[in-house]
Amino acid sequence: LSDLAGVTIEYNQSTEMRVLSLPSSASAQIEADCGVLFTTYSMLSKGYSDKSRDNGSLMRIAQILDWLNSDEEEFDGCLIFDEAHRAKNLVAENGNSATETAAGRAVFDIQRALPHARIVYSSATGVTEPHHYAYMTRLGLWGPSAPHPIADPESDEQSAVAVRAFIKRVKDRGVGAMELCALHLKQEGALLNRTLSYDGVQFDIVEATLTDEQKNVYDESARLWQLIYTRSEQKLANMMNHAWATAGLGTPDTKAFSKARKMSHSAIWSGHQRFFRSLITSFKVPTLVQQAREALAQGKCVVIGLQSTGEAHTQRAMNAKMEDNDVSDDDNELADNADFMAGSDNMLSAPQETLKFVVSKVWEDEIKANRDRRLKEIAVRKEIDKFKSEKLFDDESDDELLFSKSKAEPKAQAVPEPISTEDEEDNDDSIMDCCSSDSEDDEPVTKKATIIMG
Image (cartoon, rainbow, N blue to C red):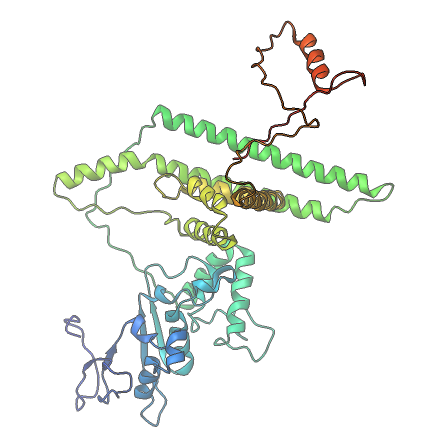
């Protein structure tokens, strides 16, 4: 409270206003009757892990609730969640439960346990995906009388079913639905945003001149996207031709074709815009680095603003890496592929990840079939390696197996001369004569076959 210089705080003068923190022990009680309690998200979520539950550890949130509900009246004070984005992973993304956090569950539970409390969510990066709204149960975005009503009358704004239904509806409608949610919150007065003042700020536009290498990268990228579009149209045309061929004299079923065309065009053109936006941004980096170094040399402080953090690309790459590692530790060929595509310095390329995402969407079935084929090849190679590792021969035997149909001792043979291209046909005939006998009176010919092991 000492930081709030010049701010008048009205409270009962007979009661001392104190700044409190949680006791060191989870079993201890908070002695003060009133005050401002500060705690961290990690402290708030203590006791939520499976290990803590197995050990019977006390939950810190219960300690806070006991203090807030110590009076006969229900708590109607204020809960301020500063840096509230720490709780944004309440609901798993794409069903991956590994992304859920204990901080998100603790924030959700304390709001549910204190229905009359006033809630403030404070964050500079509050929401970038629909599931980041999950912990903000007091915004009124879902529920019986909300813009996204729930069919189940018993599902209020505190219901997990209502939260997931809201996320699904917004995700299905894309970025436009996210923008409408922000507009609705602004209109209702539930959303306030502030920016730094630009009074006295000078702006200079610096042009980043493209190098010949960057120009070539851009041209090659344009040709690559033209190839992707052409191949996708060929795939759609083949689907339609197949539908007509299988229909016979009847009307072909074009539902699958229409769905595939819609998905293909949506993935290609949205990915096309993201790809070139990221590519052009990357072209500005050398000039940006030069400007930053010059500013640092002059004793200035450098602040760099990014239009996109690339979080979605990073998350997709991490999920893909986890899936590759789940196949098997021995199947390093597939996992090494991801490392190679990510670059030698293990840094993610936003344009590259966008391109890979588009290809995986348009050719999902083909990629799955190719992956299954490669996994079978890896399994076969493993069996061959296992077979080679077994001791099949005695120590005195070498890696050549000699098979002979006659019991005669094979004679030493001279190394054959190289076959010239001019006598190729005659030599072919002589080779066949050496390998077979047309007459029973001919002497037996020793036949040898060599198998190289290793």
